[in-house]
Amino acid sequence: TVAVQKDSRFPLASLRLYVHAGSAYETPDIAGISHQLEHMVFKGTESRPKGAIATDIERAGGYLNAATSFDYTMYLTDMPSDQWKLGMDILKDMAFHPSLDPEELESEKEVVLAELQRGEDTPSRRLFNRMLSSTLAGTPYERPIIGFPDTIRAYTVAKMRAYIDRLYQPQSMLLLVVGDVDPGEVLKEAERLFGSIPN
Image 1 (cartoon, rainbow, N blue to C red):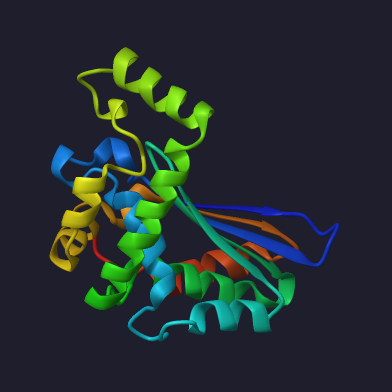
Image 2 (spheres, rainbow, N blue to C red):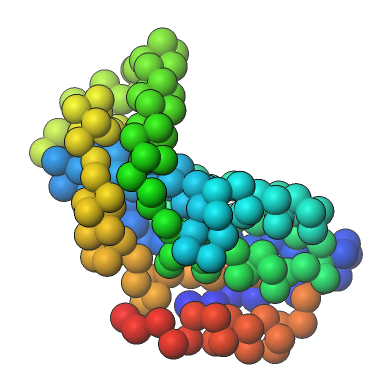
């Protein structure tokens, strides 16, 4: 699904790619893999080596980030309005063509484990996770989005690829573009970039 809102107040374009894939869609043995994948897409794609994504976005004057929730993962970029096509291409590249290098995965696991530990040192985060595990016990929402130390350490590239193949499907995505853009051009470019990807 593509949603476009023209807003010409500023020469900017905000692009968001929502994927209907978050921690609630994980099995217990891969708890947190949605969040780990969000980290990994910044480590390179099949056409952009490590560091190139950030370089391309920053060179164009843009901003890039991502976020994981229970029900979705969102990839986002804010660009000067004359660079929105680059932003869309990079979001597509991140979602559909991450390189998932095994060495980078091992390194990034340590980053996520450190993030998990910081969360455990935050009283409000600990209280929130314990509230979820008690009130939503027996549902996928009882697990923290970030996962657990043992599941994080057990991720493999094969598990990540299987997760992508299962959930990263065009019919489960929303591409949102808002800003100083021509809606017809946005739809045409979205069709060009995403239209041939099979569900």
